[in-house]
Length: 220
Image (cartoon, rainbow, N blue to C red; front, side):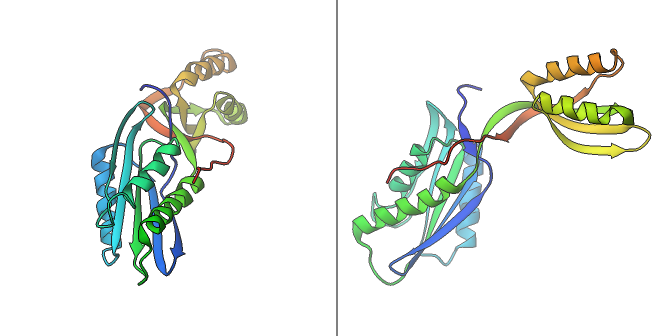
């Protein structure tokens, strides 16, 4: 998958007012140009009465990216490029951002627009949770009740996540593991059950997992 990079965990929105103009910044994870365009179209529809909906996106991360911006009718270089600069400086990839502006009746000037769009982008970039895209196995495992707590602990030890627990004759667990951790879980499970039990992989796909890092800020 190439060099690891951070992506937004969720879609978020922040807004502020600059000299009576209302700026609404909406940021979301996207994993293709088609997804980015669909998001941009949705925001334009939601805020169809706004003066401007300024879109930017970065698809990919690290040294392999596709970038896009538009000023959407604002003076050239005053909106899309500053917003993209903030997004690029955040280190995020696979991200789309639309800054919506409701004109407040007072012209902000070139410098004022750059500052307002920069600040709007910073509000969402600094607030969004970060995650990483990793390959994961989704697995099923049926166990007797007396093993439940020990299997739960084994799952946590190998950075797994229990998505569901179905209680019937046995307990059926639906779990997700980073691909690199799954063999260790299977080995521990065999030791725990004298080789009687093994989890079944039902799907392998990429997922976004949260990362805990210090507070993010972007320079102005």
